[in-house]
Amino acid sequence: MSKHHVRKHHWTNGILHTMETFFDTLEEAMEHARSSDAHTIKVYNSSGEMVHSQSSAVIPDQISVRETYA
Image (tube, rainbow, N blue to C red):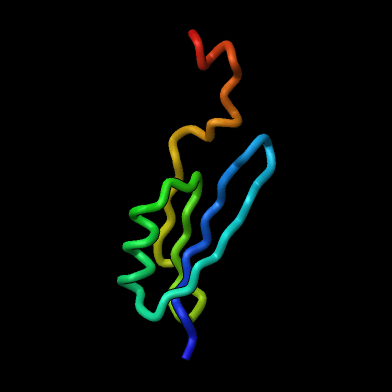
């Protein structure tokens, strides 16, 4: 039996870190995605099809210092 999975992307100091977590049910995967603070999150069903995607409005490492303190 294939598992549902969540792929999360975090930017840290200009480096992309990707983490995948596997779940038995789509509901568990969606709950995990909703509670994550990752910059980009994608949920895939047991067939490998992407069923949900969400992104942060701003990726912190892409904000210049001047914009941060303006």
